[in-house]
Length: 111
Length: 113
Image (cartoon, rainbow over all chains, first blue to last red; front, side):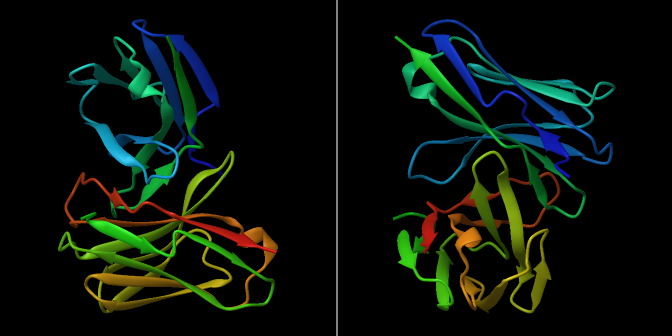
């Protein structure tokens, strides 16, 4: 049973607008959350993370929000650029350092 | 040069054949991982190793085995490949600290006929 879920398999957004990617989790013991970005024929690359003791982390155009009571996190990309077109994976840490991944959301940024 | 490399990048094999996927890293990390990616399922952990003498099963280890030949090398074997092992396989490494990032190789695309 997947403990990290990304319920939107795809997202299409116009260049310059905001992209919002969502992720839900079931295990309240997760202590750290990450977003990875994956281009075709490449491995996932780390994008941004957030500790379970925080509710927001920002890095340039990327902001991750964590709502622990709802067991929900989201990734905001503002403004969206063509190079942001990729698959985005949400992941969560157990305290023994293993990662549990969501199924991924494919983002397409339209010119 | 890439920090985490995987060979081969693509492989086609037949049911029942034994194959090995190899992973090497130059990051100096102690921890290494093998994942598989399937459409609609994300990445699932097959095996992981926290150092050369430590090997652990992940959530989907049946049908797979691994070997940690050195700190820098971690191989995944399919002893007798079957079609539902057709997937994209990723190796990853990490330092071994709290709230850490894992670094992924480029992946091996495996097709079992």
